[in-house]
Length: 367
Ligand code: PEP
Ligand code: MN
Image (cartoon, rainbow, N blue to C red; front, side, top):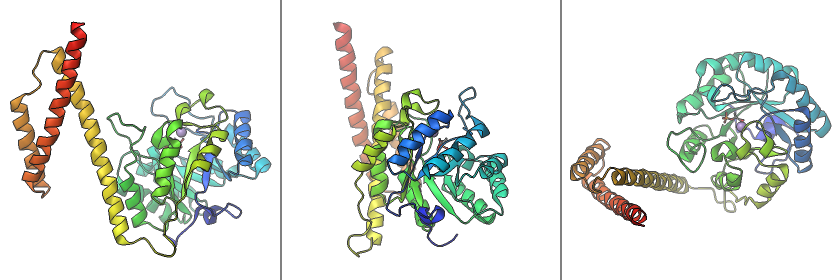
């Protein structure tokens, strides 16, 4: 892939090079009025690139699946009236042809599409011969090769103006965010393809308008280039992703609260040691988050044990845990005694939490 492309050079004269460039706009284009009202407010706040979903890939059928091509002239109006560039998601060849026909400036490939090589290939083939800028979201599953594969398909079709969007990964268990950021995956992608601008999508990671600043700040501290944030004139009334959208005024506040630190201190470049330490910090964060999830599940078990009159400590189960963790440690070339020691601690904490919960439940019942 080509030498370092900045989002502003990908697109666009006039888009400020100041980090981060922010792409903003509603999850979905709903009505002409909603699109134009939102766009006007965003433009007045200095946003230069307007996003809106025209075709929406929804997890379950029956939800709003986008207005389709009738929304494209609304984006033309946005462009004409505000001067903002426009960006939409494409998933089929037809989407590509329609978007280009209506003068859309930039395309992105959604997370569900990136996970499907047939669909990515179809989009890449439809783009052949154009020089459209294309941003590729990470696939819904945490598979770095699949993400890179999608970029390669576009690159081989002659698309050179590429960027990536990190929007987090689906996980089954309940976590703080809608999608698990797994930051180390995005960092690894950036390490392997440093020439591509990397954009964070705090809206789809957090799934919560109250957490946009927190995730954006993390992204900036991890040296991401830019942000894509969902903004709607009235989030509560939006037809998709209502919980995570922010008003243009709220977005303005978020951006002014964001602290942008320099990647380099003076002219001292980041050392390899800094990079390695950053990876360790990331992994420790994941280990602690996994421990928190483990404790939550263990609390659920306490409730089950209480309801079914089972003792907290089940020694057979405890032996089974230790033996199994010892084997896993060995498979991973870790010192098994160290891992067993760690699990003795974890198990002790888990048992003491379960005890506390059962005592509490008993107290409530005795009331
Ligand atoms: C979107 O950007 O509105 C969208 C559908 O995102 P994702 O592909 O990340 O789910
Ligand atoms: Mn959305």
